[in-house]
Length: 345
Image (cartoon, rainbow, N blue to C red; front, side, top):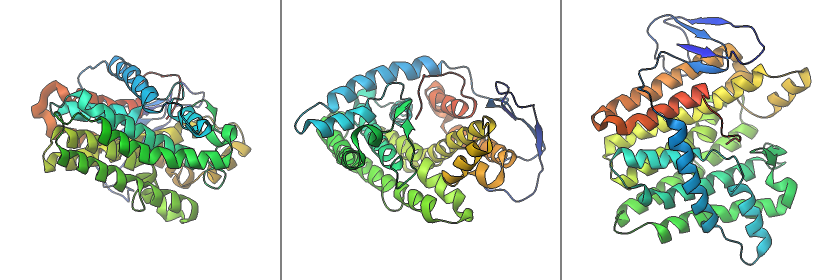
Protein backbone atom coordinates (compact mmCIF):
# COMPACT_ATOMS: atom_id res chain seq x y z
CA UNK A 1 0.00 0.00 0.00
CA UNK A 2 1.31 3.46 -0.80
CA UNK A 3 0.47 6.98 0.23
CA UNK A 4 1.85 9.10 -2.61
CA UNK A 5 2.59 12.79 -2.23
CA UNK A 6 4.40 13.23 -5.57
CA UNK A 7 2.79 16.50 -6.53
CA UNK A 8 4.45 18.18 -3.61
CA UNK A 9 8.07 19.35 -3.51
CA UNK A 10 9.05 17.17 -0.57
CA UNK A 11 11.26 14.14 -1.23
CA UNK A 12 9.71 10.70 -1.43
CA UNK A 13 9.84 8.67 1.79
CA UNK A 14 9.08 4.98 2.21
CA UNK A 15 7.71 3.90 5.58
CA UNK A 16 7.45 0.24 6.54
CA UNK A 17 4.75 -0.77 8.96
CA UNK A 18 5.67 -3.81 11.09
CA UNK A 19 3.36 -6.69 11.88
CA UNK A 20 3.08 -5.79 15.53
CA UNK A 21 3.18 -2.63 17.53
CA UNK A 22 0.88 -0.12 19.12
CA UNK A 23 -1.57 1.31 16.62
CA UNK A 24 -4.23 3.97 17.06
CA UNK A 25 -6.67 1.66 15.28
CA UNK A 26 -6.78 -2.14 15.30
CA UNK A 27 -4.09 -3.35 12.87
CA UNK A 28 -5.41 -4.45 9.52
CA UNK A 29 -2.10 -5.14 7.84
CA UNK A 30 -0.58 -8.58 8.32
CA UNK A 31 2.76 -7.98 6.68
CA UNK A 32 5.26 -5.27 5.98
CA UNK A 33 3.71 -2.67 3.70
CA UNK A 34 5.58 0.19 2.05
CA UNK A 35 3.86 3.56 2.20
CA UNK A 36 5.05 6.14 -0.28
CA UNK A 37 4.70 9.76 0.79
CA UNK A 38 3.37 11.66 -2.20
CA UNK A 39 0.11 13.58 -2.97
CA UNK A 40 -2.27 10.67 -2.52
CA UNK A 41 -2.69 7.43 -0.67
CA UNK A 42 -2.34 4.97 -3.54
CA UNK A 43 -2.79 1.27 -3.10
CA UNK A 44 -3.14 -1.79 -5.26
CA UNK A 45 -6.90 -1.50 -5.14
CA UNK A 46 -9.32 -4.32 -5.86
CA UNK A 47 -11.89 -1.67 -6.79
CA UNK A 48 -13.03 -2.09 -10.41
CA UNK A 49 -12.83 1.01 -12.56
CA UNK A 50 -15.71 3.39 -11.90
CA UNK A 51 -16.22 6.95 -13.16
CA UNK A 52 -16.78 8.54 -9.76
CA UNK A 53 -16.22 12.09 -11.03
CA UNK A 54 -19.12 11.89 -13.51
CA UNK A 55 -21.35 10.18 -10.97
CA UNK A 56 -20.51 12.75 -8.29
CA UNK A 57 -20.70 15.89 -10.44
CA UNK A 58 -24.05 14.79 -11.90
CA UNK A 59 -25.46 14.42 -8.40
CA UNK A 60 -23.96 17.76 -7.34
CA UNK A 61 -25.94 19.55 -10.06
CA UNK A 62 -29.20 17.94 -8.91
CA UNK A 63 -28.48 18.53 -5.23
CA UNK A 64 -27.50 22.16 -5.78
CA UNK A 65 -30.76 22.81 -7.59
CA UNK A 66 -32.79 21.23 -4.82
CA UNK A 67 -30.87 23.10 -2.12
CA UNK A 68 -31.54 26.39 -3.92
CA UNK A 69 -35.26 25.58 -3.81
CA UNK A 70 -35.11 24.38 -0.20
CA UNK A 71 -33.62 27.60 1.22
CA UNK A 72 -35.43 30.48 -0.52
CA UNK A 73 -35.05 34.09 0.51
CA UNK A 74 -37.95 35.15 2.75
CA UNK A 75 -38.53 37.38 5.75
CA UNK A 76 -36.33 38.10 7.63
CA UNK A 77 -34.11 38.36 4.58
CA UNK A 78 -30.74 38.62 6.28
CA UNK A 79 -30.86 35.29 8.08
CA UNK A 80 -31.84 33.49 4.88
CA UNK A 81 -29.07 35.23 3.00
CA UNK A 82 -26.59 34.00 5.61
CA UNK A 83 -27.99 30.47 5.41
CA UNK A 84 -27.79 30.44 1.61
CA UNK A 85 -24.28 31.89 1.64
CA UNK A 86 -22.94 28.75 3.31
CA UNK A 87 -25.31 26.10 1.96
CA UNK A 88 -24.94 27.21 -1.66
CA UNK A 89 -21.21 27.95 -1.55
CA UNK A 90 -19.70 27.42 -5.00
CA UNK A 91 -17.36 24.47 -5.26
CA UNK A 92 -18.78 22.59 -2.25
CA UNK A 93 -18.18 18.86 -2.76
CA UNK A 94 -21.55 17.74 -1.33
CA UNK A 95 -19.91 14.60 0.05
CA UNK A 96 -22.58 13.86 2.72
CA UNK A 97 -25.57 14.01 0.33
CA UNK A 98 -23.76 12.11 -2.42
CA UNK A 99 -22.79 9.34 0.00
CA UNK A 100 -26.40 9.18 1.21
CA UNK A 101 -27.72 8.76 -2.34
CA UNK A 102 -25.08 6.14 -3.18
CA UNK A 103 -25.92 4.11 -0.07
CA UNK A 104 -29.63 4.30 -0.86
CA UNK A 105 -29.07 3.13 -4.44
CA UNK A 106 -26.87 0.28 -3.22
CA UNK A 107 -29.98 -1.41 -1.80
CA UNK A 108 -32.19 -0.61 -4.78
CA UNK A 109 -33.62 2.62 -3.42
CA UNK A 110 -34.80 5.44 -5.65
CA UNK A 111 -32.53 8.49 -5.52
CA UNK A 112 -35.59 10.74 -5.53
CA UNK A 113 -36.52 9.17 -2.21
CA UNK A 114 -33.08 10.09 -0.89
CA UNK A 115 -32.83 13.68 -2.15
CA UNK A 116 -34.73 15.34 0.74
CA UNK A 117 -32.53 13.61 3.31
CA UNK A 118 -29.45 14.32 1.18
CA UNK A 119 -30.32 18.04 1.20
CA UNK A 120 -30.94 17.91 4.95
CA UNK A 121 -27.51 16.38 5.49
CA UNK A 122 -25.93 19.23 3.56
CA UNK A 123 -27.85 21.75 5.66
CA UNK A 124 -26.65 20.07 8.85
CA UNK A 125 -23.10 19.82 7.52
CA UNK A 126 -23.09 23.51 6.54
CA UNK A 127 -24.48 24.50 9.94
CA UNK A 128 -21.72 22.58 11.70
CA UNK A 129 -19.08 24.29 9.55
CA UNK A 130 -20.54 27.74 10.26
CA UNK A 131 -20.32 27.08 13.99
CA UNK A 132 -16.91 25.39 13.81
CA UNK A 133 -15.45 28.47 12.09
CA UNK A 134 -16.55 30.89 14.81
CA UNK A 135 -13.84 32.76 16.75
CA UNK A 136 -14.81 30.93 19.94
CA UNK A 137 -14.42 27.55 18.24
CA UNK A 138 -11.83 26.82 15.50
CA UNK A 139 -11.53 30.50 14.52
CA UNK A 140 -11.20 29.89 10.78
CA UNK A 141 -11.44 32.98 8.54
CA UNK A 142 -12.30 31.07 5.35
CA UNK A 143 -14.34 28.08 4.23
CA UNK A 144 -14.95 26.51 0.83
CA UNK A 145 -12.80 29.08 -0.91
CA UNK A 146 -14.63 32.10 0.48
CA UNK A 147 -14.70 34.09 3.75
CA UNK A 148 -16.36 32.23 6.62
CA UNK A 149 -19.97 33.07 7.34
CA UNK A 150 -19.20 35.19 10.40
CA UNK A 151 -16.68 37.24 8.41
CA UNK A 152 -19.49 38.37 6.09
CA UNK A 153 -22.56 38.44 8.32
CA UNK A 154 -21.08 38.80 11.79
CA UNK A 155 -20.83 36.32 14.64
CA UNK A 156 -24.40 36.87 15.84
CA UNK A 157 -25.94 36.21 12.43
CA UNK A 158 -23.65 33.24 11.78
CA UNK A 159 -24.83 31.60 15.01
CA UNK A 160 -28.45 32.18 14.02
CA UNK A 161 -27.90 30.89 10.48
CA UNK A 162 -26.41 27.66 11.84
CA UNK A 163 -29.16 27.34 14.43
CA UNK A 164 -31.80 27.75 11.71
CA UNK A 165 -30.26 25.24 9.31
CA UNK A 166 -30.37 22.33 11.77
CA UNK A 167 -34.18 22.26 12.21
CA UNK A 168 -34.77 23.23 8.59
CA UNK A 169 -33.05 19.99 7.63
CA UNK A 170 -35.42 17.91 9.75
CA UNK A 171 -38.43 19.80 8.42
CA UNK A 172 -37.28 19.27 4.84
CA UNK A 173 -37.07 15.50 5.33
CA UNK A 174 -40.58 15.28 6.74
CA UNK A 175 -42.21 17.64 4.23
CA UNK A 176 -40.49 16.54 1.02
CA UNK A 177 -39.83 12.80 1.20
CA UNK A 178 -42.32 10.93 -1.04
CA UNK A 179 -44.52 8.84 1.26
CA UNK A 180 -45.05 6.26 -1.48
CA UNK A 181 -41.30 5.62 -1.62
CA UNK A 182 -40.30 5.77 2.04
CA UNK A 183 -42.52 4.43 4.86
CA UNK A 184 -42.89 6.63 7.93
CA UNK A 185 -40.91 4.32 10.30
CA UNK A 186 -37.87 4.67 8.03
CA UNK A 187 -38.17 8.45 8.11
CA UNK A 188 -38.28 8.41 11.90
CA UNK A 189 -35.13 6.30 11.95
CA UNK A 190 -33.39 8.77 9.62
CA UNK A 191 -34.33 11.75 11.79
CA UNK A 192 -33.16 9.93 14.91
CA UNK A 193 -29.86 9.08 13.22
CA UNK A 194 -29.14 12.68 12.23
CA UNK A 195 -30.10 13.95 15.70
CA UNK A 196 -27.72 11.42 17.26
CA UNK A 197 -24.88 12.39 14.94
CA UNK A 198 -25.02 16.14 15.62
CA UNK A 199 -25.86 15.95 19.32
CA UNK A 200 -24.04 15.78 22.61
CA UNK A 201 -22.76 12.25 21.99
CA UNK A 202 -21.75 13.01 18.41
CA UNK A 203 -20.27 16.03 16.64
CA UNK A 204 -20.87 18.36 19.60
CA UNK A 205 -18.89 16.02 21.84
CA UNK A 206 -16.06 16.01 19.32
CA UNK A 207 -15.97 19.80 19.15
CA UNK A 208 -15.96 20.04 22.95
CA UNK A 209 -12.99 17.71 23.34
CA UNK A 210 -11.21 19.43 20.46
CA UNK A 211 -11.37 22.58 22.56
CA UNK A 212 -10.91 21.14 26.04
CA UNK A 213 -9.55 17.59 25.76
CA UNK A 214 -5.97 16.45 26.27
CA UNK A 215 -3.62 14.98 23.65
CA UNK A 216 -4.90 11.43 24.21
CA UNK A 217 -8.37 12.49 23.03
CA UNK A 218 -7.27 12.75 19.38
CA UNK A 219 -8.94 9.50 18.27
CA UNK A 220 -12.25 10.44 19.88
CA UNK A 221 -12.11 13.95 18.41
CA UNK A 222 -11.38 12.68 14.90
CA UNK A 223 -14.16 10.11 14.99
CA UNK A 224 -16.73 12.51 16.40
CA UNK A 225 -15.87 15.70 14.50
CA UNK A 226 -15.21 14.05 11.14
CA UNK A 227 -16.35 10.43 11.28
CA UNK A 228 -19.89 11.13 12.45
CA UNK A 229 -20.95 12.96 9.29
CA UNK A 230 -19.71 10.17 7.04
CA UNK A 231 -21.30 7.53 9.25
CA UNK A 232 -24.61 9.35 9.40
CA UNK A 233 -24.71 9.95 5.63
CA UNK A 234 -24.10 6.32 4.74
CA UNK A 235 -26.52 5.01 7.38
CA UNK A 236 -29.32 7.38 6.34
CA UNK A 237 -29.08 6.16 2.75
CA UNK A 238 -29.34 2.57 3.92
CA UNK A 239 -32.26 3.32 6.24
CA UNK A 240 -34.21 5.03 3.45
CA UNK A 241 -33.83 1.96 1.24
CA UNK A 242 -34.74 -0.53 3.96
CA UNK A 243 -31.31 -2.10 4.53
CA UNK A 244 -31.12 -4.87 7.12
CA UNK A 245 -29.70 -4.26 10.59
CA UNK A 246 -26.37 -5.97 9.88
CA UNK A 247 -26.05 -3.97 6.66
CA UNK A 248 -26.69 -0.74 8.55
CA UNK A 249 -23.89 -1.64 10.94
CA UNK A 250 -21.52 -2.21 8.02
CA UNK A 251 -22.48 1.17 6.59
CA UNK A 252 -21.93 2.74 10.00
CA UNK A 253 -18.36 1.43 10.28
CA UNK A 254 -17.65 2.22 6.62
CA UNK A 255 -18.88 5.81 6.77
CA UNK A 256 -17.01 6.57 9.97
CA UNK A 257 -13.75 5.22 8.53
CA UNK A 258 -14.14 7.26 5.33
CA UNK A 259 -14.97 10.44 7.23
CA UNK A 260 -11.87 10.18 9.41
CA UNK A 261 -9.72 9.07 6.47
CA UNK A 262 -10.61 12.19 4.51
CA UNK A 263 -9.59 14.46 7.37
CA UNK A 264 -6.37 12.58 8.13
CA UNK A 265 -5.29 12.89 4.49
CA UNK A 266 -6.23 16.58 4.53
CA UNK A 267 -3.97 17.07 7.54
CA UNK A 268 -1.12 15.15 5.89
CA UNK A 269 -1.32 17.23 2.72
CA UNK A 270 -1.51 20.46 4.70
CA UNK A 271 1.52 19.47 6.75
CA UNK A 272 3.46 18.77 3.56
CA UNK A 273 2.75 22.27 2.27
CA UNK A 274 3.66 24.13 5.46
CA UNK A 275 6.14 26.86 4.52
CA UNK A 276 7.15 28.30 7.87
CA UNK A 277 7.17 27.83 11.60
CA UNK A 278 4.27 30.31 11.76
CA UNK A 279 2.23 27.91 9.61
CA UNK A 280 3.14 25.03 11.88
CA UNK A 281 2.16 26.97 15.00
CA UNK A 282 -1.19 27.85 13.43
CA UNK A 283 -1.79 24.20 12.63
CA UNK A 284 -1.05 23.13 16.19
CA UNK A 285 -3.59 25.64 17.48
CA UNK A 286 -6.31 24.35 15.17
CA UNK A 287 -7.09 21.23 17.17
CA UNK A 288 -6.42 17.58 17.71
CA UNK A 289 -5.02 15.71 14.71
CA UNK A 290 -2.82 12.69 14.19
CA UNK A 291 -0.32 14.81 12.27
CA UNK A 292 -0.02 17.42 15.01
CA UNK A 293 0.29 14.84 17.76
CA UNK A 294 2.25 11.98 16.18
CA UNK A 295 3.71 13.35 12.95
CA UNK A 296 3.16 12.66 9.27
CA UNK A 297 4.52 9.10 9.23
CA UNK A 298 2.15 7.86 11.92
CA UNK A 299 -0.73 9.70 10.25
CA UNK A 300 0.10 7.87 6.99
CA UNK A 301 -0.10 4.57 8.85
CA UNK A 302 -3.50 5.52 10.29
CA UNK A 303 -4.75 6.54 6.82
CA UNK A 304 -3.80 3.17 5.35
CA UNK A 305 -5.52 1.31 8.16
CA UNK A 306 -8.68 3.38 7.71
CA UNK A 307 -8.67 2.73 3.98
CA UNK A 308 -8.37 -1.01 4.52
CA UNK A 309 -11.07 -0.92 7.21
CA UNK A 310 -13.56 0.90 4.97
CA UNK A 311 -13.04 -1.47 2.05
CA UNK A 312 -13.31 -4.51 4.29
CA UNK A 313 -16.80 -3.38 5.33
CA UNK A 314 -17.83 -3.02 1.68
CA UNK A 315 -16.69 -6.56 0.91
CA UNK A 316 -19.86 -7.67 2.71
CA UNK A 317 -21.95 -6.05 -0.04
CA UNK A 318 -20.52 -8.03 -2.94
CA UNK A 319 -23.92 -9.64 -3.58
CA UNK A 320 -25.17 -6.23 -4.78
CA UNK A 321 -22.71 -6.26 -7.67
CA UNK A 322 -21.80 -2.98 -9.34
CA UNK A 323 -24.13 -0.97 -7.12
CA UNK A 324 -21.41 -0.93 -4.46
CA UNK A 325 -18.80 0.64 -6.76
CA UNK A 326 -19.58 4.28 -5.87
CA UNK A 327 -18.96 3.55 -2.19
CA UNK A 328 -15.68 1.77 -3.00
CA UNK A 329 -14.64 4.73 -5.11
CA UNK A 330 -15.33 7.19 -2.28
CA UNK A 331 -12.65 5.43 -0.24
CA UNK A 332 -10.07 5.82 -2.99
CA UNK A 333 -11.05 9.46 -3.50
CA UNK A 334 -10.72 10.21 0.21
CA UNK A 335 -7.19 8.82 0.09
CA UNK A 336 -6.00 9.77 -3.40
CA UNK A 337 -7.90 12.96 -4.35
CA UNK A 338 -7.80 11.80 -7.95
CA UNK A 339 -9.77 14.78 -9.26
CA UNK A 340 -10.77 18.27 -8.16
CA UNK A 341 -14.11 20.04 -7.75
CA UNK A 342 -12.51 23.45 -7.37
CA UNK A 343 -13.69 23.76 -3.77
CA UNK A 344 -13.59 22.01 -0.41
CA UNK A 345 -15.74 20.42 2.29
